[in-house]
Image 1 (cartoon, rainbow, N blue to C red):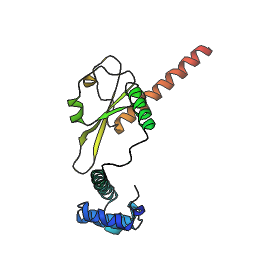
Image 2 (image 1 turned 45 degrees about the vertical axis):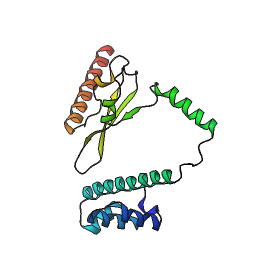
Image 3 (image 1 turned 135 degrees about the horizontal axis):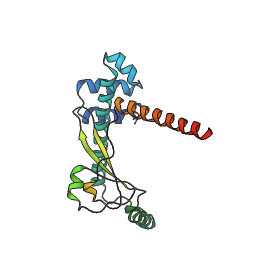
Image 4 (image 1 turned 30 degrees about the horizontal axis):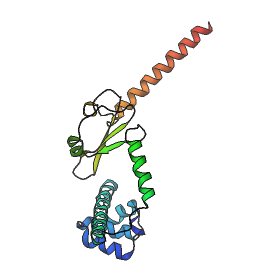
Length: 191
């Protein structure tokens, strides 16, 4: 989402309804002029990570305002032109067809997952918990579960975790050992 791409009227709406903090408002106004995050950091005497985190918060607030406007628009115009009946049928058909396939991930919030009935996972399907963890200043961090076709969804282990520098060093070391072992085996075969 490029903030400078919004119209003046839309920008004014965000300023009025998004409840920006003073720092967020400063970042928003500079972004509306087309500045980069680096330029913002220099202009506002802030570090890059602070600007990046603030911009995530600003985008979340903008999204909330846009969603609220869409709800209001739907409520004021309840007789909006529905989709062509044939298109609705096709969309429903493919949604039902792909719901139990491994090609389309299934995603819900943690609360929604708890409310859904537990069932056996579908082999090779991704199950996403959208708001697994939230930090104070950052948006939700999703976590993934990978279906095996045998285990219940709630019992699947999470397959995403932070990769540390130590993990990378360990894998690099294992690869080097593996390469040396292969080289020695090739050398023995040649003899």
